[in-house]
Image 1 (cartoon, one colour):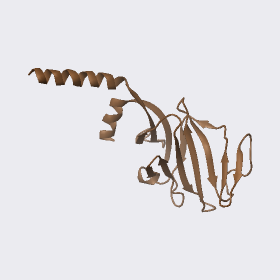
Image 2 (tube, helix red, strand yellow):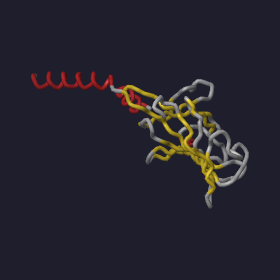
Image 3 (cartoon, one colour):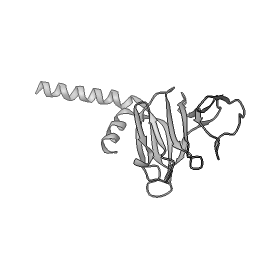
Image 4 (tube, one colour):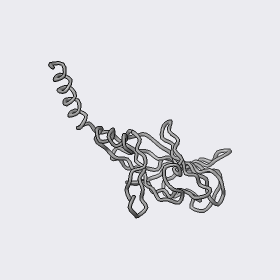
Length: 171
């Protein structure tokens, strides 16, 4: 009986400590209006200073584009760099503001952006784009977690560790 009480007390103490510990997560959630608005589709642990990428195929040039973002200390998401190998609609056409352009043999790298988001909007391509999220060793085609043509947002948040563990068990 004494051992049982000790286990209960230790469990309560650990739960209390962990209930105050927060972790940083990268969340992908539904931004389409409707009954699933704001439903979390994916959440992965991430740290301030970490980067993640969204790779997609441009619908006009049919060429790959890689956008890399950085998690800032205030949890905003800044554009770290963009890499592409041909000019096309809605891609940068020339340096603007303080961006730096590197022209390499097989691609153009644009960096030194001064652009941040509180959440990053992504419309998942229906036919060609195949938007894919790269976070450390995870490779997640967005069409596998939500419908092609759907509108999602990517955001960094702080969340209570216990809440995260419980949500992951039921997500």
